[in-house]
Every structure is written in structure tokens, then in C-alpha cells.
Length: 121
Image (cartoon, rainbow, N blue to C red; front, side, top):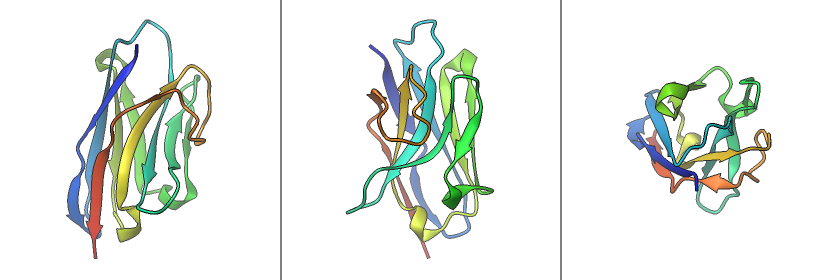
């Protein structure tokens, strides 16, 4: 069973930066597609950034040029560097993984518990 644990959330002022981490365990020697999602109160979960099975990255338009998704395969860790944060980036951020490439669609099989990001103006 794949387990995902996020960390790195917090509260920052607009214009600040945060780096989220997602560590996978129970991880067989199989390449998963992985991504970051977020959910604001009262809104649907939305895709932020993702790797496909060929390590090609995809970003939501709202975060292009500000967020960067990377990974360290040796450490089984996925990262999301978030710069120039805006109040509208506030939400719970989730890491997700699946053998199928769902891109930014929130239909992945495996999910972490989430880490809260709060950006104040």
C-alpha cells in the first residue's frame, strides 16, 4: 500500500514563499505519476502541478511561473516550490499518486492527508 505524507505548509504573507514536501513509503519499484492538488474552503479540489510517467510537468494556469514541481526519486519525495504567493493560493495542499497519468484531474488513487497553506494580504 502506497502511503503519502505531506509537510511544509504554513502561514506567510503575500509575496512570500513556501516549499512543500511529499514523502512516499510502501513504494514498489514502479514509476508513479504524481501531482499536487489544493482545495480551498467551499471549493472543489483542483490540480496545481503534476509529473506524468515520462516526467513531463504540467501546471495549472494560475500557478505557472510561480510554482515549480520537482522530485528526488532516490528519496521518494515530491516537492512543490511556491513563490510569489497570493491570498488566493490559500488552501489545503495534497499530494497524489497513481500508475495512470491523470494529469491535473483529481482522480488519482493514492492521496496524502494534506498540509495547510495560508497566505495573508
